Amino acid sequence: MSFPRRDFLAGTAAFAAGVTAALVGTKRADAGDASFMNNVPDPLLSDKELPTFKFALEKSKGRVSGQNYAKEATVNQLPISKGIAGVTMGLAPGAMRELHWHATAAEWAFVNEGRVRTTVTGPAGFEETNDFEPGDVWYFPRGHAHVLECLGDQPCHFILMFDNGYFSEFGTFSITDWIGHTSKALLAKNFGLPESTFEGFPEKEVYFAQGALPPAKRATPLQGVKAPSETHKYRLLANPPHVNNKGGRLWLVDSTKFPISKTFTGAILELDPGAMRELHWHPTADEWHYVLKGTVSVTMFGSGGRYRTETLEKGDVGYIPQGYGHSIENVGDGHCRVLIGFNSGVYQDIDLSEWSASNPPDVLATNFGKPASLFEKFPRKDVFITG
Ligand code: MN
Ligand code: MN
Image (cartoon, rainbow, N blue to C red; front, side, top):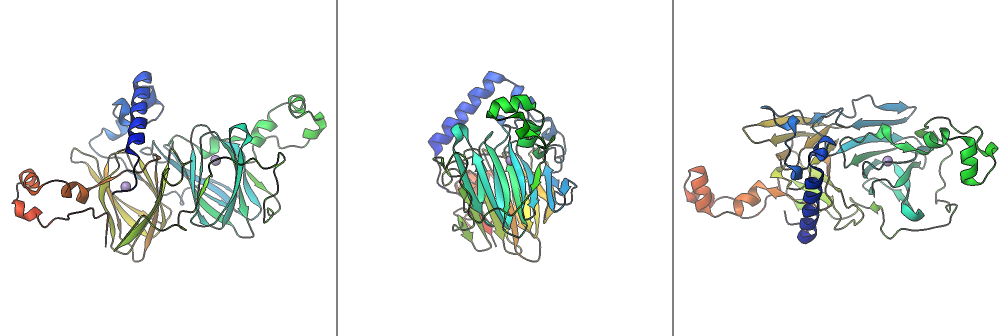
């Protein structure tokens, strides 16, 4: 598929990644980096059979507190998903996912229902507050602090994706956990306030905090406004789709349109009944699925005769490792919608029809042992989605 590409930049990044991998040897593999740059085979993908690539996320237990919930898919729930973890989260009106950070993974999110307000703080105190509606996405770089608030009097639901399958939403660095375990004397010195200021503060992590509905317009931060140069918000579904074929549509955003999202690409794939996203692979990224609506059949080809099919329903998660062949077919009665994440800031794919169309008929004839005239009937350009 010909999306705008920054091949020179992508090539430079790949070269840099290769150098880094060479310098640290197999340590990257031990740390869970599924990149092929280190040439260490992933033992999970070296067996005769491919492992499962499906996890029923919404049916899992997770963490529930009143109307607030968080359920995660990490390598613990879905061992194949070493490159990307994901979370489904719901917040009740007046609830927030408290101030926290995580330097082990960047966070990319899609708002599915309701409205959400985020405030993110980067180095040097640059901060941004954004209000999100369904179809909007955010990206927070690794280690940047943030808070998520449910806006208005209706609950909200969003899906978070992280560029590290070992990342756990329940191992983040939360502000109450930190302050609750620091002595009042140290806090008093830190803030230049009397120790009594910190009496009655939570003694352990709050995680979900409950309070009044946030103001319709955000109040000014204590320091005043200090806006960053790059925004953390992109209106994915408010923009036209990147692909609009008979049979389906794909909305996609990577760093070429959303510059801060340097390590992640996100997409919404919508297919009419019976339509499919054709057989393809991604040279530079793992792929993570969350089914928002409908039922899809996902195939995965893993070389050496290994092939696996999973049926994903609403609320299920799927995962395709970098370079593995796959397709997504709508096998339900109605439209389907799949949220798709890639752990690369520049989107790339190679489709089977694009591959065959890029070869002359005699090459295909010899390869398949069939007459060249047969291949004259094959597509002359990328199919991508077929109805
Ligand atoms: Mn977070
Ligand atoms: Mn794909």
